[in-house]
Amino acid sequence: MLGGVGADLDNLAHMHTIAEKLFGDSYEWSVLAAGRHQMSFATHAATLGGNLRVGMEDSLFLGPGELTPSNAAQVRKIRGIVESLGHSVATPAEARRRLALKGADCVTV
Image 1 (cartoon, rainbow, N blue to C red):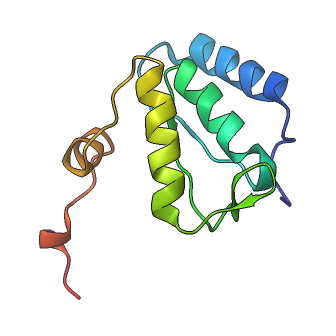
Image 2 (cartoon, one colour):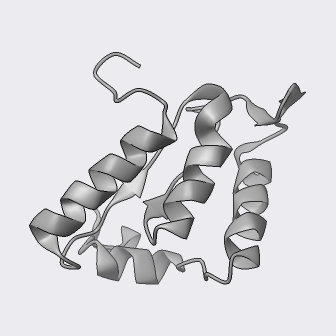
């Protein structure tokens, strides 16, 4: 991705280490990765306590050589991984609160 950091887990670990030194625990961070790196980077972010996102806009695959049927399939897969690591997945309301976002009921269409 033009302008993105190389898809190397060492890069992710380094950026996380520097952010911890600069900000302590007073920041939110997240990861997205394109293509074949999507699930491994999302999993690594979860192990480090970060936020993540997956979706077909970043990868058309559910696993190696397996096209994903939908965004929902990718979300189900990463949710299973995150929960198997002992973490919980934020509800939409929790995510909006943590990120100081307004809800759909506060948006004029």
